[in-house]
Length: 365
Image (cartoon, rainbow, N blue to C red; front, side):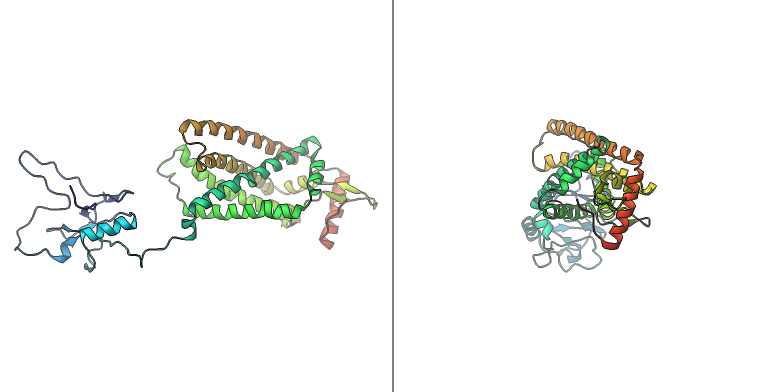
């Protein structure tokens, strides 16, 4: 029965609230009317005795006459611009109110309304591109990479590394098939992480935990990827020591032959220190969880799992994938922590490292 969707309530009332559809719910509920007695209207006090005449403009807001209560406020909920403008027009303008009516807010016009950002205008497309790049190529590469590293325990790791290095246009594939997608996915993920809000303090449900863990593991995985590439690929020193990855090493006896060092150089890098080892464990777990949980949410984003039953079934698949990838990573890490390079491998690695520091060149077969 109200002409507008706005209700007056005391400024200091803790019950002041607003829903998302533009209807304001504030203050104590009106008392029920007794038999033959009309109940008080929302936003009104019992009229006081006052001389007749037009209402005081300081006591008008959105057409509600606030008789005898100078501490009332109006909260106008967010709504579509057209609806807000129509509401303001129908209820009457309340600009020019004194500063003491701090609780009254006007509907912004086109000149003052904030323009949507690039992310707002392309939200639908960016969300799906972010989801897609997390699956292909990043997720696909993660599965392949963990499976390849697991081959250290089966003496086929060197063969896998040589096959990768023999791929044509490898640098082109790395830049456009891996690094640019990772940069896009990570950059947009940081924006979503910073702009999002976790509500675990109030609602400790499993879905809320997954929401928070997805963002935390994404940051941890990004840190680990940077560290992993910087030390093994770029050769940045760790704790004062260089641990670059060498697929082949120089011969110790001075011959032209090369020594296979894929396994030894990987082990040396992971065994560089306790902190490095812990970082590899946290990084692998974070990367696998981020991918498996992101795969579950991607199915919702793309409209593939609409019902609760479909989401539950797809969740079981993602759990199996998580456990399988964790098994790959665990086998690789356990082997790397327990393997001891041979004397020939250590001598070749040290000689190759000296050559690399002096010339910056990697031995190639």
